[in-house]
Amino acid sequence: MTDLVVRWKALPPNLRGILWVGLSGLLFALLNVFTLIPSQHLNPYVMAFMRYFFGTLILLPIIMKLGVRRAMHTRRLPLHLFRGAIHAGGMFLWFIGLPLTTLASITALGFTGPIFVTIGAALFLGEDVRLRRWIAVAVGFAGAMIIIRPGIGDLGLGAIVILISTPIFSASNLISKALARTESAPTIVIWQHLTIVLFAAPVALWFWQTPSPTDVLWFVAAGLCGTFGHICQQNGYQLADITLLQPIGFLSLLWNTLLGYFLFVQQPDVWTFVGAAVIFASAMYISHREAVRRAKVKSTVGPAGPASA
Image (tube, rainbow, N blue to C red; front, side, top):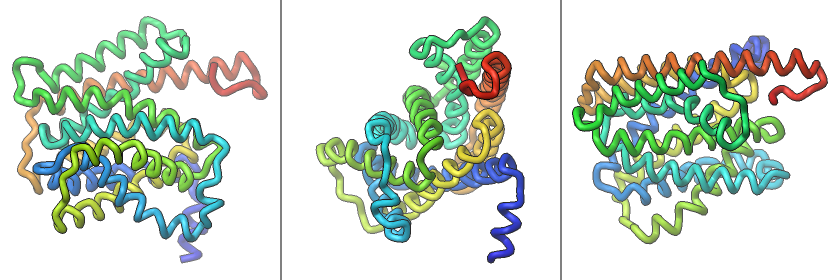
């Protein structure tokens, strides 16, 4: 075991980051499977609460091993609380859409994240977004419309709700990337779970449905995959730049398509993959332009300056 750890640490940080994020994608795909089953009959607000409640229980051994004070120590509590609040809202929307569309479509629409990040940077951060990036944003939305096909396809409400949840998750991911500069991966994940349970509990109690024992088993499995998926993702964020990790996300389309097909006989049509390719190309270009922009800022400001404008 020690030899494996030594070999792992000898790998370049970027490669370790890619492997962590690749593993997180597979775990999140399994999370989709384990939550899709009870979502057929349970209220989505109860689903969101139960998913993170059991995820929190699974984190308890990690908290005990690290020590409560060390595991939960943070100087950025308001940012953790804000992230938990918006992530809970995204989870509510996501669980509404989950039983209404295919896993492949959910994953494909999730690729619009960088598009919403670009819009948010322009509207709220005053970032100078030029014509080429706006064209990429328009192309990405065209890809989303290919998947949804308003008035033509049969995805309807499910795909639309998933699309609305995407900018919320994008904001949450940006906050987690900012937190990763000063906080450990377990601390970020622990606070994420605790705050989402806090914000989701009142809504879940209002719409409460008691899960069956079988449902509880699915939530335990989902909690395991989701919790360790977030830890893997955070480890990846701390080792490699998010623009480098962006292409790895495309693997999740493969995992979700295969699992949806073999376990639920979900057969996404060719337009889902066409739209996914268009969205992914747009997201990759946006990530590339962001990397170019940061490089220019560094060369202008100098080594001691900030990494971004």
